[in-house]
Image 1 (cartoon, one colour):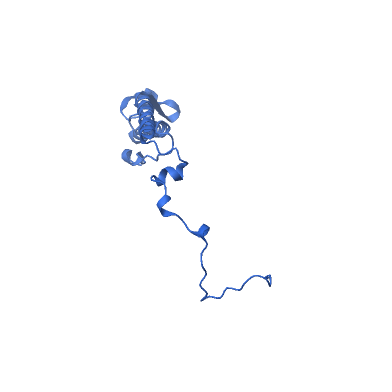
Image 2 (image 1 turned 90 degrees about the vertical axis):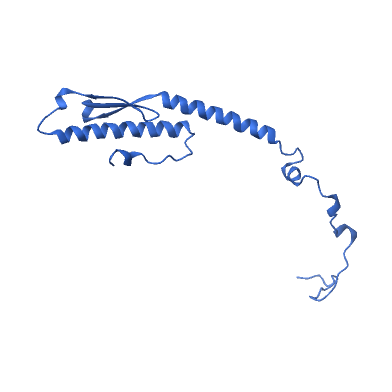
Length: 145
């Protein structure tokens, strides 16, 4: 409800502005970003230093991951494949009991399963080294997935 003492404003009415209604654009801050960030300004040097420190930490974590040796296992341990966190194959170990000349396909499948297991571990290690927020491509297709 409207108070009867208040003037009614029609759409075509012109209203004079009071001095305190005006905005002084000449008094705007010289650095608008500093005004938004709270007066202290934006310290690009500090941001670059922080980015450099983060990059160093990430490189150390990636090197640690690359130096880590992981083991993929299949067939209850009859086939083992070791690779580094940088996906470099190190060794393949096959228990003689797993070698059946009449079923070479099974042995091939076991080697492939052990390799995939090792690659999955290396992917997990790399994701952890990158902070977990970066999605690495699925490398499983490289090995016949």
